[in-house]
Structures are given as C-alpha cells and as structure tokens.
Amino acid sequence: MPVLVRGARQLLTMRGPRGPRRGEAMQDLGIVPDGAVLIRGGKIVSLGPSRRVENLSLARHAREIDATGRVVAPGFVDSHTHLVCGPARLVDYEMILAGATYREIAAVGGGILASVRAVREMPIRRLLLQAKKTLAGCVAHGTTTLEAKSGYGLDEKGERKALRAVQALQDDPIELIPTYLGAHAVPPEYAGRADDYIDWMCRSVMPKLKRRKLARFVDIYCDEDAFTIEQGRRYLSAAKDFGFGLKVHAEQFSRTGAAMLAVEMGAASADHLAHINDDDARALAASDTIATLLPGSVFHLGLDCYPPARKLIKAGAAVALATDYNPGTSPTYNMQMVLSLACSQMRMTPAEAFCAATINGAYALHCGDHTGSIETGKDADLVMFDVPDYREVPYHFGVNLVVMTMKRGVVLYGKGNVGWDEN
Ligand SMILES: [Zn+2]
Image (tube, rainbow, N blue to C red):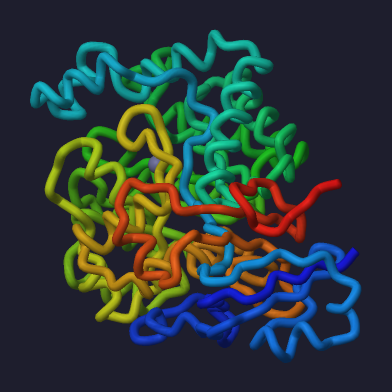
C-alpha cells in the first residue's frame, strides 16, 4: 500500500545535483514548506507541496502519516561507527575524568586492546544482542543507514565473528555498511611486529573477506601511537587491489600525513581530521575524499581540539558528520547531539550540519545514489522531528526530538500520534 507523509511544516529534501555538497551548497537544504512525500514499494515516487502531492491519484489510496507542524528530513546516515565493540570501558572513563591521556590509558591495559580482549571472549550471540540493542537506539534517534567497523577482534577469528554479526544484522532493521578495520591496533601476538601484522592482513585476511563479502570498506588507524603512513600506504594499496572502498582514521591526536594519504589513495573518506593544516584542507577540497568529522570523541575525552570545520568548508571540502560510536572515545549513537556539537563547538550552521549528517554521509559510504536525500526514486528513509523548524534540532542539545523513523517506507519507530495505525 502506498504511504503519504503530509503536512510537514518543513520538508528538508536535500535535493540537488549528484555528488556530495561543498561550500555554499551545504547551506541549501531544498526546504519545501507544508511538504509531502508519497511512497510506494519503499521508494519515493513524488514529493512537493502537500496540496499538490495529496491530489495525485496514488495518494488517494495511501495510508497517511500526519506531519503537521513538524520537520521531516532524510534519515541520518551515520558513516563512522564501531558498532560491534563489547562492553562499556568505565575504568578508562574514570581515568579520562581524572586527567589521563589516551596513551596513559593504553599503557595500563585500557584503550582499544581492552575491548579486543572482551570481544575475543564474547560468543557471537552476545555480540549480536548487544549490536541489536544499539541499533534500536540508533533508530529511535533517527538513523537509517549506519557504517559498522570491525577492529576489536584483530585476529582472524575475532574479526570474522564481528563482521558476521554485522552481516547477520544487514537490513534488520536498517542498512549496515560493513568495514574491515583490522589495522585498528597491533594485537598482542604481533607486539613489536606491526609490519608483519600488516603483511598478514593483506595476504591472508583481505582475500577471504572479499570472497565471503564480509566487508565493503577497509579502514586503518594512522597516528603517532598507531600505524605509520608507509604501513597505511601498503595496507590501503592491497585493499584497493581487492576492490574494497577505503577509509582512513586520520590526524586524530597528531598530524602524520594520513589525510594526504587518504587523498592520494582515493579513499571514500578521511575521518577525524582534528590536526590538519591548510595544505590538508586544500588537498581534501580538491579531491573526492569526504572529510568526516567526529566531534563526539573530542567532547567525550574533554579535549578542545575540535576539527576545523569552517576551514574545510571554506576550502571547498565535502564535510560529513558521524558519531564514531565506540566504547572508548565516543559512546553515543545520537546524531542529533553530534549536530549540536558541530554547531556549538565547530561553528557549523544548522543547515551545514544537516547536510553533513545526511547526503554527505551517504556519499562517504558510496550510498548517495539511493539514500541521504528525499528525491524521486530514492529509498524512503525519513525522520520526523517534533519541532517546527530544523534549527531546533541542534539547538535543543541532548534531547531526542525524533517522533518517527522510517526505513524504505516502513515505520521502525513511532512515538505519540503520528497518524500511524499498524492494524
Ligand atoms: Zn573510529
């Protein structure tokens, strides 16, 4: 049965030319006042002013969702998460609060390797249960597409287990994009032999992941206490040869040249970018690599080195926003809070933040052809907020304003009276 979402005070379509938005174009949300969206078979078949769309013959037989007085936008695309991650790291958290650095936490057995120990021990059904619970939270906060990285198994069994969990949850209930992040940290069995570990992943792990279709992207964490640029180049070249899309954790705690490496390798995105310089911003702007900013991790660690969003947007880079959901540095899956941080801490405008969290996030996952905007022919991935103006979403920081989340025309989350009766 067709579905008609009608009467939205503001319908944020994000419609525009193919490709991610840059510079001034990030301000243009393609807002339709009193807007409606007509959906059939999970796809958007028409959109525009309610008085026009509701008079289409298909709309007369449609189930109606009343959006009167509210904002309807494309569902959030969270393009950077460590979904399968094991339990909360509360010892780390208290150390952070007491002033410890990420390096000091790692030195006493916390940090990434603490999660690795936990994930290696967890049976897949527990990882699945945990991921499902997290996904339900993502949906309730308006996310309809989510990238999910491995990287807490590191050995073959652990990584396969994490990526199988992601595979099992594919499209249930939202779209998951799996990323192999074997190069997240050097596992204990390869301590002091990072080069050997890189070689083993390229030679032994990547071909299997490709054959079993367990990952679409391959990601590496390059930084002072992580992998070097040379190791990154070797690892990403191998991944590219296997046909994976590429992602790089770049310039999070120090500048090592990883953003330039991402551009050089034609990566889909370079993520974090807190420590980039002007040359990096210009190189990203001149490339197709999306600059994905993750202010949640800066906030949680209590740091003040937010990525220079204004510099990137001014240079013409395509900026995306994501949660970086993970147990060590950003334990949130609330994209609305990320929008608030982007506005208050990085001085993005509310319009730029919405653009970065939807259409540009979709392009960071090579999904821009079917999601990220409300346009004819795209998947009906929508979120409805209980406010009359989109600027109120970042404005009410920490508040969940979502009253409905829809994926491919199916309401996954509905609160209060949205005119939806499942009977
Ligand atoms: Zn990350």
